[in-house]
Length: 360
Image 1 (tube, one colour):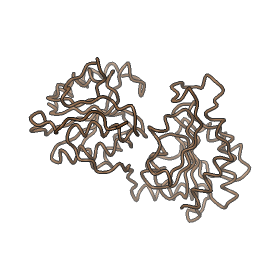
Image 2 (cartoon, one colour):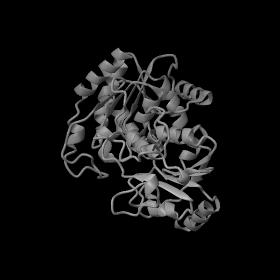
Image 3 (tube, rainbow, N blue to C red):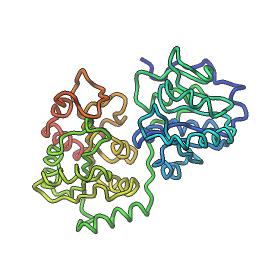
Image 4 (cartoon, one colour):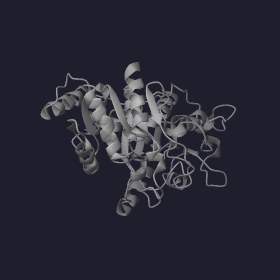
């Protein structure tokens, strides 16, 4: 089935004349934002002179500073029906007033199907709203909208809406900016933990946003040991709240490793991935960082929608998963026996690791 969704016969005309101020809504986490890159590139190419703002989560402020397609960042205070951050109810009136004061010409809803957020965008007072709209649900401007595609990668689904706006597709490749200061910080971290920065290293990232999406820590430890025995420095990465998980992986290992879980920023972690020979991880945000940086990866997908989130380059990035009737999973913790995780063995992963290193 065509993942581009229903498209108009020709790009809309009068509705998009004089667009100078654009606000894009995508208040989501790391991997989701990276996958929006191709749609944002297309939007920039369609409106090269426009001032484009991203309405997003606080972490994305620095990401916007590093993204050529976006000019400005507006922090989203949350919404009672959106799970990505606790809603700051007190901040909502000022946020709404601020959006209306911007006199936006075009609001672009790249958040998802629109059942929750389309009414929110309508309160911004934008002259036009481009959005994904489900049949029978509120749709601000039908001529600038399409239904959320049910098939295709996340990148392809988002491009369906920019297609409606007449925006040119400039490829499906992802982007992640690594600066020299990020690289210097990564080297300093390795040295501070007694690792030789010139020695080839691999990154092992055992965390994921939900526990249901995590492969077993002991299995990560076994794979990490095998990589250490092959002569690589094993670097454990993760965010601060995953420190206990990182310690669990390190404690289960028999070989030395460098535990940097909770000690990196997104940006110097990107530098570590950039210089790594390989990333081994769950189906989570860092897998998209590796895809953008063209670092080979082996991704264990537990409960995720593989067709939607798998990297396009399946030679450089291998995704291992087992089919289960409960996929894709929406449970924070698996209510069953976590067969989507236990069904992927360390033998499977090491075979994929061998292929990835051979190709590299």
